[in-house]
Amino acid sequence: NAGVMQNPRHLVRRRGQEARLRCSPMKGHSHVYWYRQLPEEGLKFMVYLQKENIIDESGMPKERFSAEFPKEGPSILRIQQVVRGDSAAYFCASSRGDGPGNTIYFGEGSWLTVV
Amino acid sequence: GESVGLHLPTLSVQEGDNSIINCAYSNSASDYFIWYKQESGKGPQFIIDIRSNMDKRQGQRVTVLLNKTVKHLSLQIAATQPGDSAVYFCAEDHSGAGSYQLTFGKGTKLSVIP
Image 1 (tube, each protein chain N blue to C red):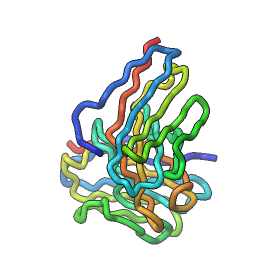
Image 2: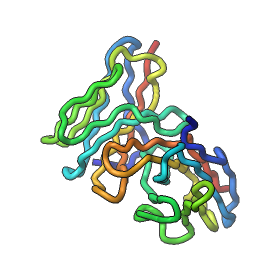
Image 3: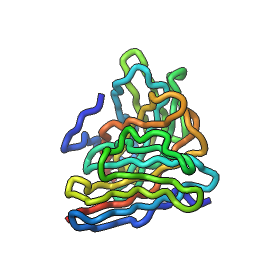
Image 4: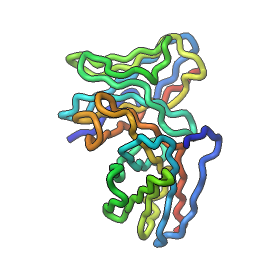
């Protein structure tokens, strides 16, 4: 049973370009989460999605960032017009359900570098 | 509670000794806690969890202790091995039903001396 799959693992973008990060949840998981991690810091919650629905995006910047989890295919985190401050590791996670007891499993991350 | 810092707290332990990693959480409403291990360049790996109605939970070589009175969580690793070297994060959940947000602490770097 494959874990949470993220790609690309490393992405370099120039300021002003768009970054697209993809995430396929674990088999049987319908809940997807995106977190961001700056160097030497803990992960910060960004958004929680279920198929075709954004459940909670309270941690996501209002501008330039968007996320989707379509009926078919992976979840996508999209960052438009990237700036240097967007450089970070972006982790996707998935779970079978929500609430305590539904273990959340993380992928290996996508490292975005904005130059 | 959380604080943003440039340097992670570091714990150096001799191989074979026991390690204790501490975490203070901020929200008294948190009802679920998890410890994650993160190796360099990798994602967080689930180690053990505990609900707020428990004080202690044991896994393989690991024990988590929860003291709700002082909002303190600890992770004990028995017979620490070189493969245990990593950054350890505690995470708390206080979002309640309908959402699943984890609030992470800033982490502790464990270095195991062979």
